[in-house]
Amino acid sequence: MFIEMRDVEYVYGYKTPFEKKALSGVNLTISKGEFIGIIGKTGSGKSTLVQLMNGLLIPQRGDVIVDGINTKEKKKVKEIRKRVGLVFQYPEYQLFEETVYRDIAFGPKNLGFSDEEIEKRVKEVCELLEIPRAILEKSPFELSGGQKRRVAIAGIMAMDPECLILDEPTAGLDMRGRKRIFNIIERLHREVKKTIILISHNLEDVASMCERVIVLNSGKIYFDGSKHEIFENIQLLEKSGLIAPDILYLQHRLKMRGFKIERFEYRIENVADMIVKNIAGSITKEGGKE
Image 1 (spheres, one colour):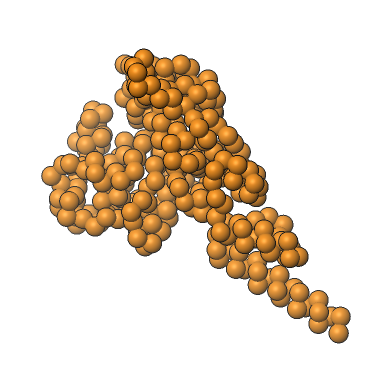
Image 2 (image 1 turned 90 degrees about the vertical axis):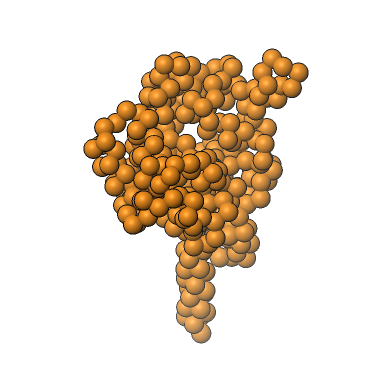
């Protein structure tokens, strides 16, 4: 087990008149190599949950164990951050160095790596995240929105975490930038074998990429299972206050009208293929009857 949460509770403003419970009774296990989507209404506790996973927040009750290390062990925070990298929503707001190179190198340098190792890691992540070497000496503030986002992710990846957590990684990007970021995330999981945890309000993105889905509702885990279980049960999604992607509503309606759907598809191109095959099959049958 890579990450384990045992009866975790987190309260903002703990022991003050402004207490607000964000999470309670959370029990969760995550294994290496998983691709997990975390969804839920605004205020359901998603960001709090992932900040507990890399020791940014410490639970008032319960325990969070990362690769055998309890996040309450203050002396081992660096070890936890080496294992679990967290990319915040709008991570480009965290860029602050004079050059792109120095921004990407900041994390490894802070962890005590040698200059040679840092240079090697910067080169590797730039290739992986399609960051041109020509921009390494530029100010990060001169870059486009998509480039800034990739540089911010590169800064986390340069520390080579086993697990990469991304909180709304494509927020504010145009369609081209979104597609590029998601292609990179899928490659990190498929080729580099990283454990990926993705928070997104866009359920279509979660449905198309993730294998396991965790639904949070009012600070508790409402559902935890395969994406097929949750996305093929629209009523279950709606009970948690979420609206299923249009692509799933479409397939439910088609199934009610007699389309043969063995398993729901989550990518538009696959749904289009399925519709064409159903129509072609229907035409063939009608032709045979004649």
